[in-house]
Length: 111
Image 1 (cartoon, rainbow, N blue to C red):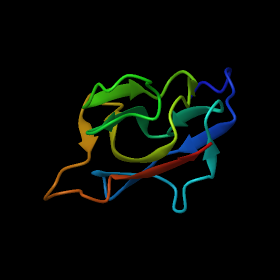
Image 2: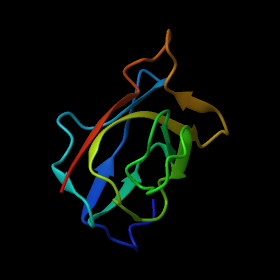
Image 3: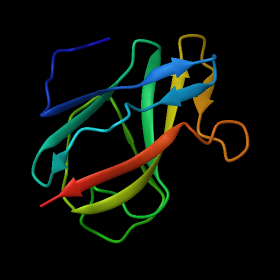
């Protein structure tokens, strides 16, 4: 895992039971203008935002970001997220409405 680039918030995603990509609970308090980087010891992180994204100012829905680089928070509000990990062997695990609804959470971004 590359720790070279730092961010205001380094959010560690945990792999549980070989199929769940778990965000910290509680999530850190975040504000517009701060940066966030998602990382995991278990694989490469992808965060998907089914509605609006805190990392975009437009109204594009169902967007995703890679966890590799710090991203700046651009919008305040509460944002549902879905978390995925690409494991070492190439298998993707994470959010699924039936099999892994816990692989996600809410990003609460203040002003």
